[in-house]
Structures are given as C-alpha cells and as structure tokens.
Image (cartoon, rainbow, N blue to C red):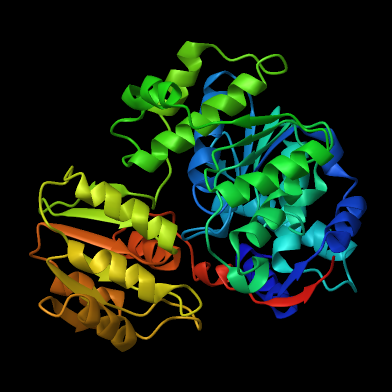
Length: 425
C-alpha cells in the first residue's frame, strides 16, 4: 500500500458517516491491543479554544522534557497533522502501516473515519511510548470516539452554540454532551462562564465525585499575558492560557512543571490558522482565523477592535451552510473596508451570493463582491495592505495551501467532511 492508497482507504470510510457512540471504538481498540491502557491523557472538550488549549498544554509539557502526543481535528491541510509526537507529524510510512494493520483487524466492521483515526492515534502514541497525550474531542464529548480513555484531567474550554443539530439546541443540552468526558474521581478544569452550562458541569462533577476547578481568574490571566504576547493574539487566548495553567497546576503532583517551563511553553506555542498573522514578500499582512461559529466571530471581532493591526481590513469569507453564517456576517460586516465572499471547498458550502446578500443587509454602504473561488479573491486583494481570511477552518486550510504555508498534501482536506448516520446512547 502506498500513502496515496492509504488516504484513499480513509476516504472510503466516509461512507459510514459519523457514529455517535463508543462501542465501535472500544471494539477496534481491543483489536489493536487496548493501547489506551498504556497511556496517560489530558482530555479536552469545549466549543471553541480546544485546539489552542491543547497546543499550549503540549508546548508546556514538551518543554518540561516529556514525550508528548497530540491528537486534534480537523486538520488544515494534511491528515498527518492530526497525530503528532513532540509536534512532529506522523510519517507517511507510519500512516500506511497503521492503515494496513487496523484495516485488516477491522475487516467486516463499519468503522467510521474518526473512529479509525482515533485508534490509529492511540496505537501510534503507545508505540512511541509517549509520556502524556493531549487528547482533543472531535464533536461533543459524551458519545465522541475519544471518550474511551480515562484521563488524568478532563478539560472543558467553554460552552457556546455550534453543531446544534447533533448536540442540542440549548446551552444546557450542549453542556451535557461536553461534560460527558467527566470521569469518576478525575479532576475537571473549565473556563466555562455561561451560568446554565456551568451549572450542568457542576452537577455532573458532583455526581461523579470529580473535583471541579474554575479557571478564569484575572490574576492568572495577567500573570500569563506577557508570555502570550504576541504569539497568540486575542484576549480569548488569555482565557485558554489560564485554563492550561490551571490544568498544569492540578496535575503538579503527578507531573511537576516549574514556573519557568510553563512560561517558556506558552512563549513558544504554535497553533496555525487561529489569528495567525503573516506578511508576504510584498509587505501585505494576512490574518488567518477559523472563526466558524458565532463565538469565534466574536473573538475575531474583539481582536480587530483592539486595533492591534492598525488598519481596517479587507475580508475574504467563506462559510459552511450548516453553520450560523447569517449572524457571523452581521458581526463582521461593520469591521471591513470591503468584503469578498467565496465558496468553501465542501459540498456543505454556503453560496457566496447568499453571504454577500447578508453582508449587504448588515452594511449597505460596504463594497461587497461574490467571487467564484479563493484564488480569485486573493488576486482581487493583492494590493490591499491588510486582508482577513475567515469564516471556515476549511477556507483557512485552503488559504495556507495557496499561500505556500502548509505541508504538502494531495487532496486531504476533504477528509474533514462528515455526516452523522447513527447516534447511540
């Protein structure tokens, strides 16, 4: 099997959609030798900030000398981004080997792509003898494939509206799903500040006798502000940093880390596609941010209102139709000098004309143009001093490819596509 054939096999798993339940993952993990039992985890759930918090925790513990596995999704460009050890992506040869081994073991079972990738990661991290794995949920938590592990700590970043068709149409229902990662006796750390969501987390933590730590103290955030600036801009990253710090402090007796290593880890954290500012050879500044839901758009708005970029930006925006793009457009419309709307490379894309119409309704005086693709928008913006590319993490991945800022990958962004076919539990 070649790497291209392995990727083709993974594409084939998409026919099974997304299965919300743990039975398949437990079965495949058993066939792989129960690799999760050989590893230690920090399990991270939440609506926004999961990836950034994971990146901070990974950087801190790697800087402290641990061998750290990192499992995240979706990927921006290459599937290999999802499975990393000490921030080195899994090799193509290891992807091929694991696909061969697990496909043989799972023959005859309808395993979904995410279930398969989850066990691939577990097997690889166990083989690599990782000291710690930073383990991000895919969707929700309670019925997510990642929930077959028992972690050292459960981390819930925040609760906001996203994926309502699967997780529920109220913050309370969404919180129940996210808080499903809480395990008996395992400490829970959260930065959730929505009262109804926090009440749910508190209730489930009490029921499971899990110590609960709230991480949003102003003194924590101010103590870390200097270390964060300017690598991860945005006030919301200080909340994520406070959450990461609180998690490290909760685990100090099991995994000691000095204050110096914590600061160094935060100062060196890298997480592409989230308020990522680049400057090309012509001096043009481009901000890449996967603000794919309302809470993410609010964080982008707040960052731009701080005027840290000194000039009103031109926006390139593409969104998925199943997201709340009307509210995202209304939030961002007042911030732009002009806007170009584009499709996302997905069957689920919102139509650029619909996005443009929504922007015009929110800001009639604005120059708004619907274009056929991102490449055309980049050409149209070539003389603009500051461009923001946002609205979907898929679009950010495409931009990283076109701007030559990503690992080479042939058509792997489509592996992020999914649809729910069955919910159990």
